[in-house]
Length: 407
Image (cartoon, rainbow, N blue to C red; front, side, top):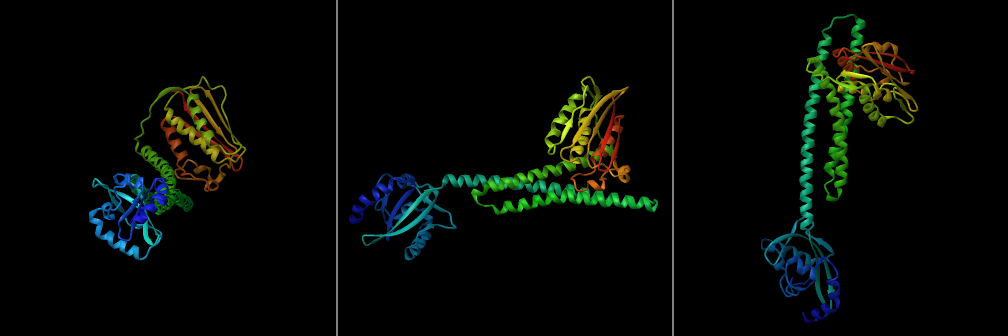
């Protein structure tokens, strides 16, 4: 012991007190022969107070027996390793309180004696942070599960609606030509619903599966990335469901229109501002001229819905470096709004279906969409005394013409 104290004074003095981790040195009898200032502070002892004490003084009493067995096994097979791998370790302070620790063991020989140096870290704060992260993850997983259940219910409702529509269509006794057209429309719709829901749901499932693989604390950023992906796809599905709900409200007559006086420029400015964010490379929207004096008594939210749908469609179905032109003028008791594009156009043989619910032209199937927008626009305009028409030629563009009563 005296030899070690002399060695300790010269060898360990500077080293022990130069590190922030607690360092405790024990002999083969588990008697503490040295401790640094950090270790004394971690366990609540005064300087030098631990020297000569059995290591048990730093171990919770209920863990003594287990700890003795582990130490006996370790002393027989000494290696440099982290103690307690796969287990939670706890230390005991002088006042009897316990706290979580992380311990690294390093055996060494000195002057014919065998010793073990333990590096001790108080991980109380880390454990608290891990619990907070675990709690947050559990809450997020619960929200995801709840939202997934809601989406499953909604999808099931849509599937039931599709089945009902198929049954109703099958009862219609029309000519072979008409029946063939209806069957084609049903096939397109089923494919559309399957694609529009399957793609984002697959993304949600993939991200949910990957989240479960990132269990380490330092992988939180990966979990957040997948949660952001899930949120984006859920929002997209929400928009689709909102379209279906709009159709249901129109059918049942549960739409409440709110009239007000407003200049048409107010709505056009907002819609075109938002649409500019969606423009492809080189695309441009030409703003209508001399419309500052046009005032409507109309539902401004419905007008915003109409213009947003038409302008966004013009952007989506037009190529890069093309022009989308918006015109507006007054004529008698009507206000006219025209949206012209240089896009893919509508095939002549399919133009008669363009306002049918769920219909999408053959040349537009590769673009995302539900085929509901134009049907909703037409329904609202008819309810409000308005009208929508169009002219189109395949590969040369389309012009949609909306007529709105000023009163």
